[in-house]
Amino acid sequence: MKRRLLLVSNSTLHGGGYLGHCQDNISDFFGKVNFSSSLPSEDRKSVDEGQDVKSVLFVPYALHDRDAYTRTARDKFQTLGYELESIHEASDPVEAVRKAEGFFIGGGNTFRLLKSLYDNQVVSEIRRRVMEDGVPYMGSSAGTNVATVSISTTNDMPIVFPPSFSAIGLVPFNINPHYLEPDPGSRHMGETREQRITQYHEEPDTPQVLGLREGSMLLVEGNRATLLGTTKAKLFSRGRPSVEYDLGSDLSFLLTDGGPPPST
Amino acid sequence: MKRRLLLVSNSTLHGGGYLGHCQDNISDFFGKVNFSSSLPSEDRKSVDEGQDVKSVLFVPYALHDRDAYTRTARDKFQTLGYELESIHEASDPVEAVRKAEGFFIGGGNTFRLLKSLYDNQVVSEIRRRVMEDGVPYMGSSAGTNVATVSISTTNDMPIVFPPSFSAIGLVPFNINPHYLEPDPGSRHMGETREQRITQYHEEPDTPQVLGLREGSMLLVEGNRATLLGTTKAKLFSRGRPSVEYDLGSDLSFLLTDGGPPPST
Ligand SMILES: [Ca+2]
Ligand SMILES: [Ca+2]
Image (cartoon, rainbow over all chains, first blue to last red; front, side, top):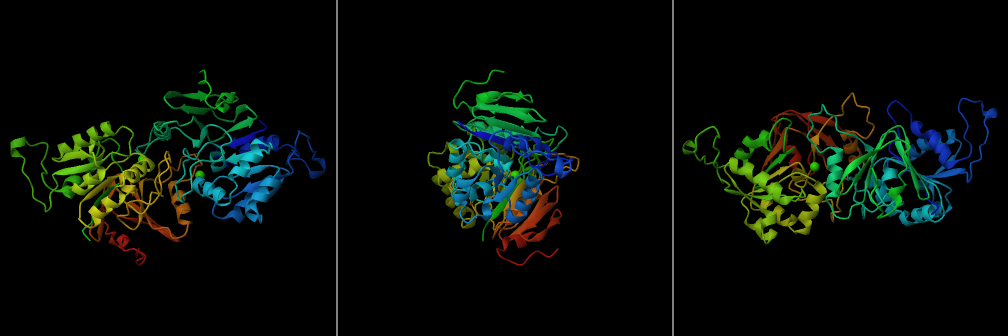
């Protein structure tokens, strides 16, 4: 299993810029030119870290204005030393996936994103490139949702109707990005995030759900999964109490489909 | 058009009991025995208000435990002087809809609710009974969502996959129940409710969305719509700024499909 995934909860952390909170993780993940922006360009050094990626294929389908979204992502990735091509600028999206050295699927509306992935017939081809060819996959928010079993634990509104809620399926569990606890001072009576995930687990045969708080991300390398970032994560399993995992936790057990329950 | 609807944002208001905040509206809406619980039973008087409803058909599909949900709803409706039968206890759900004097569709998960309505083949029959026979329809939260054009502006998680997001279509617009403004002190970066509704309106041919805050409800009688309850409501229209409407506002213009924009 060559799979390499960087699944980020959120694109922007409060008080920071676009992908600012995870830019070091992005450089570690895609490898290559990891230069410090504080250095003048003549001092920037290329750092070899295995299979370095020169160009990332961006998927902007989750937002309405794909051109503007691509400019934002391209600016950030160029700052980090990567070229960025957008799948929406390619004449043949499937061919673009076949040639990609790395993927970045950005956040926005998860239903819109998944519907566009199906409309452009790239769901199974992305899966094949990641699982068989080892092409690294970075997702943020909605882009993290679609990397999992299904989008059934997205927070987004169902603004368009995709042909299925089944997603790319790069891991055998689901993620709830932007996970948060209820505000104890709130008078709002709509369901809390935990109540919504509990409703999901009332349905039969539903997989585990990793609640990734803003600031956290999951790094998957082959059959090893590690919690990175700045916050703990909360794991929800059908019929069992939820469990908190600290930063740096080894969550590899999540990758064992139907494996034993996590020891706590 | 005989249509009579009571579309409630939320089943329980902070600090109150189940349907407590709207119980007087329920009595006004379904008519008949509107007795005060403070009076001894021998002093209770039946108040004739047109076509009084003796028994309400309850739809508990939005929650997993339909028996427990029915007990909760039955207790409340009996306190208000109505019998309550649940569609899930009927041998033939379509026949139960055909015989119903009044409908109450309760809240929970909107996807689960709509899927069950389709699975039990009652979507078009409920529409026919309400629009042609004038059977009164009360919805709360998810039960309000499914009364509209589509469930595309629900806040719920897509825990099951319905055959369509199209709903019963008793009005030509959508509702966002539990509508709320962002907490100005929050550091959470997930989309605000208004941003989510704006994403919906980026899609073509999307209807107006009435943001019903907790505590508010919409009464529809024929071609007249009135905002009731304790809070203002916010109307979102594709390509236009949102507009706040005060309690008691006449919102009948919403019922005119393709009609002129509201004057503000
Ligand atoms: Ca989103
Ligand atoms: Ca709900």
